[in-house]
Length: 219
Ligand code: SF4
Image (cartoon, rainbow, N blue to C red; front, top):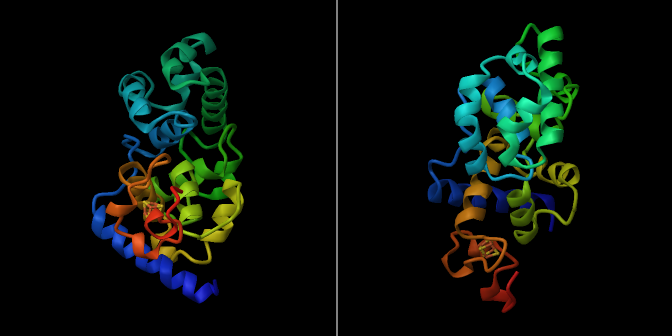
């Protein structure tokens, strides 16, 4: 599809989803950029709901980067255990806390390059922090929901998050880069589920080439 038509389609999709999900926002509880950074590291391969349960106590115990360096690896592993992959996540969190303490005076930096230098921080985490804590549109967050919906809605054929993001950046208006993933996540959870999407109830059905109402095949 020509890029201008694709852009037009994306704008319509965003408009309809904003109407359907007026309260769509980051669902990881946080009070500042540092808490969002930790929550996002914990959210890898874990639901946001589970992360929010764990961070309720975690953020009371650990208030600043150096607090994570005062405990043993084993203790932090115990504190985040239920989010899964807790050994790697402990390494990332303590590594990140060390760099923040030693190089940034305990403050989370606000550029993509600086964030990507933190241990265990990849582009998705950096985008989440920049967009939601600093209001900076540096890219589009691509998670499992954004991947699935972008495929079904015909916005990309790419497989990796990095390449999908590169397809989305030219067709999603920059002012919507931060809200876009929240809209897709809300729609993915409510309607365009991984299994048995509810195409008959979908507000963007008319714009979707994968709708089973058109194809007769469950996407
Ligand atoms: S029509 Fe179906 S496949 Fe397409 S976005 Fe809606 S729920 Fe998903």
